Image (cartoon, rainbow, N blue to C red):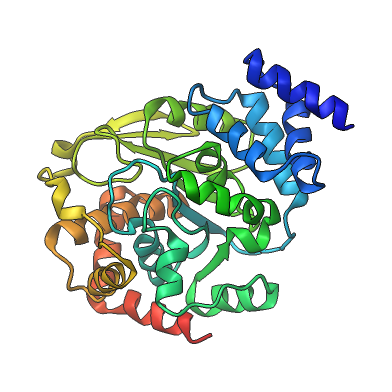
Amino acid sequence: MKIIMHELLKSFFLESKNLTKQEAKKIFLALSNGQINPIQAISIAIMYNCRKPTLEELNGFIEALMDLCLKINLNEFNAVDIVGTGGDGKNTFNISTLTSFIVAASGEKVIKHGNFGFSSKHGSSNILKTLGYQFTNNENTLKKQLELTGFCYLHAPIFHPILKVVSYVRKQFGFRTLFNILSPLLNPGNPKNQLLGVSDLESARLYAYLYQDKNINFSIIHSLDGYDEITLTSDIKCYTSKEERIYTLEELGINKINPIELTGGKNSEENKKIFLKILSGEGTIAQTKVVLWNASFALSLINSDSIQNNYERAKQTLESGKANTILKKFLNI
């Protein structure tokens, strides 16, 4: 088997060979049993910075990682995952996690899957840990969180042992790799809906093709100036199972936001202050509008109401203090 793996890696690195689905699957299975090491795995991941993975390769990697992950059953909930691929280098505050609490406080269910930031300080796990949350993979606890608050969080390394194995090496590189592409596709809770933010159009199209064969209600969003979330700094490209379209700021009735208004903190404590201020309804106009528009797109995935109506719903949720209450309740379960 080691000889076979050596030949496979040799053809991948030296001949730039595309992998079949089974070959891609074998590579991550080999990492799990020690036939390749974390440095080799990260080297493979970095190779995809030079070219996009094929659909076959992605499906092989995903199948291996989902076969190896800790299994959990949250299928009774009609939930959404709200996530960005990361690695856009824009250094924004944690928009997706704030959005998640607003959506949960609006009466929907959110099963969020995430990790520490590897190319920024603003990963979902970073902010939740700073807020005092203790990561768990206990199914009963996660179900209780969903039932009582509408939100639960699946910290990737405690569900995906392989991600924990490569995390140290990945952190040393400090830029996006294949794992940024894979992470949104690896939620162990298998939510029925996903709002996915992507930083470039090529990746957005790749995800759109990938999701066509999966039983998931999705919306892939991309700000045309390179953000992996709705930032209102440019028009928004959106892919769903039904259509592909551009939302202009003009048609949404929004004035363009200066990117500097979305900058995150320099450290965990600064990010925590920004997070709590926005969730308490005391964020700047720009910060508040951005999280509300992301929430409106996520809500529209679940309830099929218009984006504008869901914006008003999210706004009422934030202004009423419900989102802040949900966070406090979640941290105390």
